[in-house]
Length: 150
Image 1 (cartoon, one colour):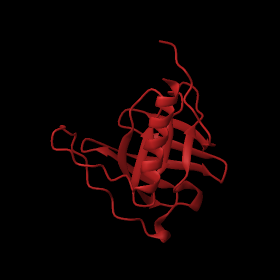
Image 2 (cartoon, rainbow, N blue to C red):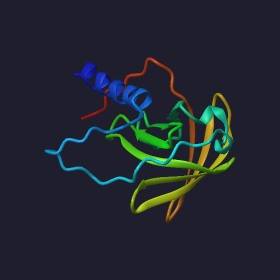
Image 3 (cartoon, rainbow, N blue to C red):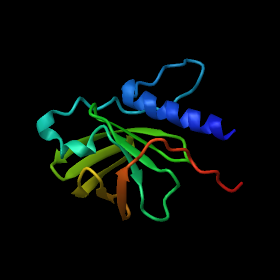
Image 4 (cartoon, helix red, strand yellow):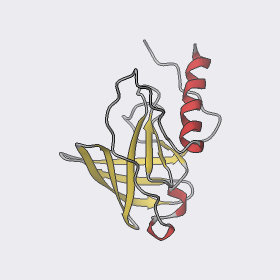
């Protein structure tokens, strides 16, 4: 069972990185409408190279285990964890230290990049009713979600 979950997780991450996060359309399955992917971000608009196309693991306490963020260069943001299904959102750089994230048609917020280097990322999410500070580090492979209590 553990191998199956790891294989599924690995498939999602690989699909996001190598297939451009283009979901397949299955007319038999209802889907949640999402915004069209943001247009590709020009290199001059990027906050800094380490942010993009890196799998970032959230290290902040009290977050779901294995929470990952992947800011793809085509403007897609993939968010997932060991206990949640993945979410595809869009993102764009407003400035060198401010991002706009659109999770669905009703949820849009900014994120301030407080620190960014090859080995760490610090974000402040400016949500509707609160600010959430996150620290992240590049995820290291191999990674398997831990067995969680049932």
